Image (cartoon, rainbow, N blue to C red; front, side, top):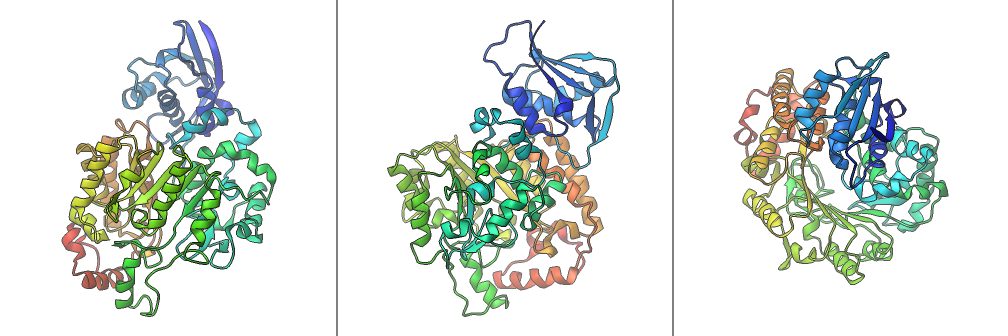
Length: 535
């Protein structure tokens, strides 16, 4: 046997991203028959019958594209054969098993707690060669720290009401672009304090969403961004006042939207204005439309100046596919020949044209497009939750996308609440079986606010139904979710319902019924499975 590299898992703990890069460094286009990568393990993390480290190694080998026959797995685990049989059957792309060798020594079975197995991160391979060359200290900062996030050094999010923050899940804001330029906001006191706190490896107050998501075992925005933008780690060494050189911008020019989704509000959707006035949420004199910036063209003009620097643009809104400024940006990028930039969309999938121009025409030359479709349910249920939706339009849009741009990185992003929680597994399976998505192309977005929709507050009988249904769904899903992406999300729901919070029936129905009356709808007609909810 010729050993081409040895990986000691003791060096990585539960840092499966770091383990990914260690294995990837040993990838070769061609291996000789007697060559082996030796992986040594004296521990694992358990919440099921098999270890999560073992499962993660198999998934990493799949993703890196190394045949199992070139892996020698050496472990002190005397039960490894039985465990690996399950892993091979359920997670391997290769029917040939690893070569297994049981070695002398103690084997430690750690409780997994909130640890989750490796799952492939979008775009991680795009910069993997660069990330593989990071120093040990840099990798520790990006992939081991529980507090550090690269976004404050490379990114800004601009909301529809001119609120500015490092990202879209940040709680609060760090500036107001109706008063100040993005460059002035970039290194203001608030943003400097965030960077300093992170460099000291302390939690940032505004980062509570990621903290909670990670606690539930989901992959947070922080973790995703550290992987995707880790190649910009040198920006960190500029300290608390880096140069204004954006690599990523999340732009929400205005709140123009054709839907009034139940999980949304007027700040993000102009269609929410009328019902909000009717049921007393806002005053009738409140403007229908919000537009970010100091003038009608201000935000566009500032982004225009950063286009040559950017790696990625995130388009949201409102509904980004009906906002003209987004098309103007695409045209300018095309004029500059920047067709390899990452274009990321959060869209409701109801509109594929603006003023007679197809979005597929606007995307014609761009090679790196990712779409998160905000779809919470199928058919009439979908129409209810995202009021204004015509479900047939969603299906037609997806069919056209598959036909014209099958290369687009597409996934459904389902906001999961008390209303749709029992339906989400059915929706996922239906779209897989119709060929609209692969099993892994489904993200669970956990709704935390408003509290009356949070599944943590669901009555116990409903939590029991959720547990049963999601357990069954995971039994179907695990063996076909090659990237673990969807599995991750459905498992997190099972973790979330362990939280014991009281269901406030009065608050729930006081919010549901006025909107039902305004929209001439009925919750129980669309979601009859909720008939036993206390009233």
